[in-house]
Image 1 (cartoon, rainbow, N blue to C red):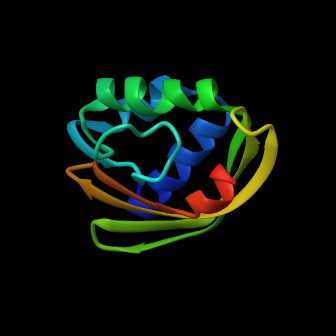
Image 2 (cartoon, helix red, strand yellow):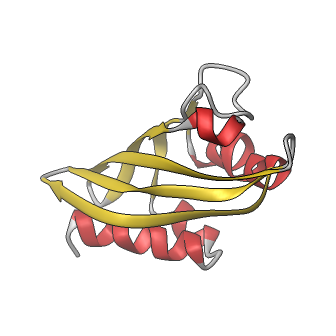
Length: 128
């Protein structure tokens, strides 16, 4: 499986709620960089390890959003770097407003595991 195929599978697993598969693909020391503008990020947005990603990101999605989804429009890469282009949709529970926000993710894959995640997202649209 190529790195691009692996990342495509991660989004498919996330979309179907197969969180154990997503976590299993992560390096035990994954560096996760969540955009500091996300409504639930109360610190730098940098988290280390799958447990921190679950607590600080995945669990927060349900707390702050209804019907949160990630739609992938393209995935491409070279070597150990893979980029996802797409958007987030859902309802911000704090504002009650529906959003559709552009998003991009940059993944680094090392030794067959997700070693780093970097998020860029239109937080103004999400938080409006």
